Image (cartoon, rainbow, N blue to C red; front, top):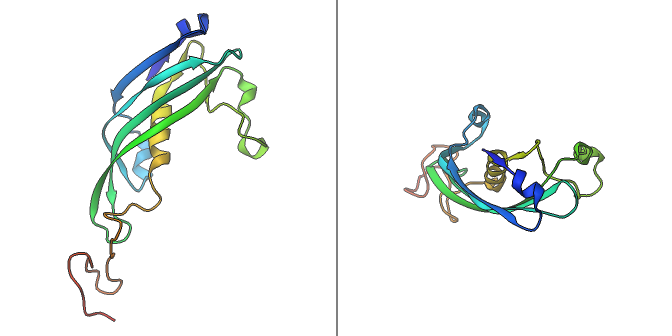
Length: 159
């Protein structure tokens, strides 16, 4: 979603609130071990920092993912609610490749003229919040490596 920041660039003493809900599914999602289902809600505020063409966004992204448990392979859905704090800059030189950056003082996203892309921010926030191991429950017993039975539902006689 393109978010117009022209009024913020003219007056730095206020923030611009935003609240949108949309589907952020892309072709790249086919390669992910999970799917974002339904719409993502993203709300918060964009503020000028007072340091030239730099903005700060504070907000929250909410969405639901569908995957399978990494231990027992049972299907699962997980609701995610993620706090988001990122910065934007119009200075193209501020975006230094990771291998050249010594500190994390660089902005996260570019300002493109009089707008910023909030969809990219919301999607990144949710994708980075997905745990490496998705479990159907914290005490998941997994599945038997020999017969494949879900050990949460039944035991097996394999050894």
